[in-house]
Length: 504
Image (cartoon, rainbow, N blue to C red; front, top):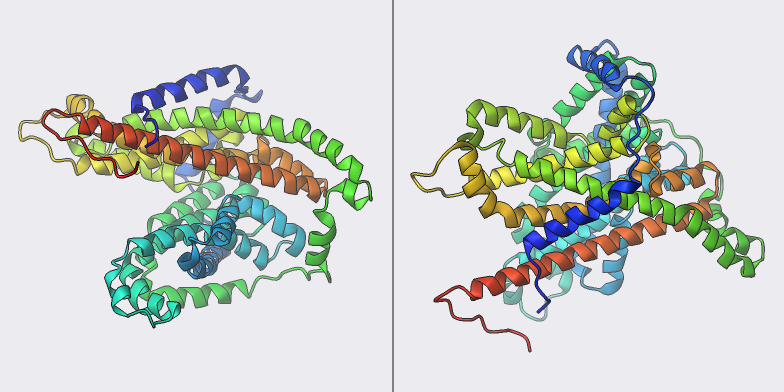
């Protein structure tokens, strides 16, 4: 059994790491008055201008179409991979696909397909295929194995899967697919910031024009779209929505792809420059220059942004878990708290960072605020739901006393676990926010792509994926050690017999 660690020790460790990061933080704001700019934005958002409804309406249609078609394609690929997920090559392929952010996939695909349907579709489908493969394999593993055994040894694996395993797991798979569609809508909207004509593109255009009223209309429509997804996307209508999405995407004009563009990209563009020039001896100096000049500085900034964002998310979640509990904040307070958390978690981190960037200018501050508020709202919402389901004594107090003496101690384990779960996601998103000008790994990746140095871009992308995989493994290891410590403390309770070790 792994050595155990305490939850309090994990919290203290992450707080200490955040303090170490403080000297390296760049929170400088732009020269203008941020509060005046924030006031102008607020006035535009409170009075949204829907006069450009035709332009916005087409962006909404494309946002939905890319999300539905991309999630469907990724889900189908993930379903094919899921039964074979235990095989190492399949598992590694899924890990590689999902460790690269949708925007990074989009930037690479744009070099091959241009601003086209395939760039947006595959940017969503590729990482989602890896995610679906992992999650669906877990759902299938948890299904009752007895019907599969009753079929006998002579039944082929495909028949066994279709008739004995998939039907039992279908409700969980459908529920997860709906959740993934919500994520797909966020991804689809954000793809607009790299040129695809979705809601993110319209939002970027209106902000550059200073038309905050129209930008407010885009944001209002986006929130409505996310909030109502489970009403308009019913499982029985999935095929109809998919057909409609394909019909919309066929109306998008795409530039003709040059003959052999994909082959040139794979055989020339991503080959390191020294090897293309026939100078193998120059490969190591080339890698060293790339590592010291781009990867290490970008990685350092990524970790600093992620660590401070995690602390902000944890602080918001620690307090926010009580906002949606009526016995703590009252009915009106719980409704308002629920509204705030819904709004914060509905907007992707990239979109929130873009909004803060307009107010504070390019620094780490917009990235930390966006990541901390979005992830803190997600964790706070999940903890609040758990808090509402707690069984309380009839004489339990209300208000802050209930929160401090009852809810916090009972949900502290869930709080730490959820923060660790989101840690890997925050690292991943910190890297991608470099596309907005923050000097994280995404900044150097974007710089390489703009300079058409795809060989450098690929190495930076691989480094980003490896960091994500490493943080994910580290997070899982810490959670395992916390779990080991919890079991040991439970076994040590008076009157409880010691648990027998199941392994030598």
